[in-house]
Amino acid sequence: MQNAVRRGVLVTKDEKPRRGRGRPRRYAPGKRPTLTFRVQEDMHRELAETAERAGYSISEEIERRLNEWKSLEKTKEDIAKLRAAAKAELDARRIQAI
View 1: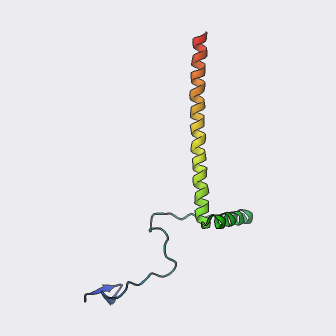
View 2: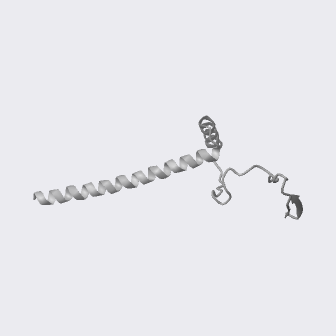
View 3: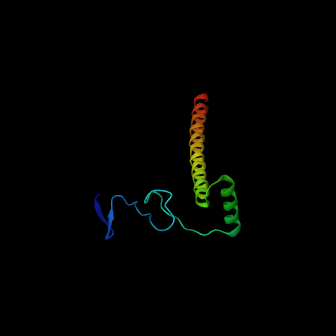
């Protein structure tokens, strides 16, 4: 049986490691930064209802929506690039037709 000192307390190898205080972390420390902000009551209610129906926490629902918004913005950028390319090709064909 080996002994070790943890936080100034002598413990034996056979002892179960003590759990930390408070709610256990869902994700590894340092992996997910915290954002804190306020919303109107109706927005909070909508987020809570949607999260509950989907089986998510409110934080996960907010993160899902932010990811969806980010994807939408990327899609808008891609559409703008495609439009610009199509316009350039159409302009080039019109010039060749003259």
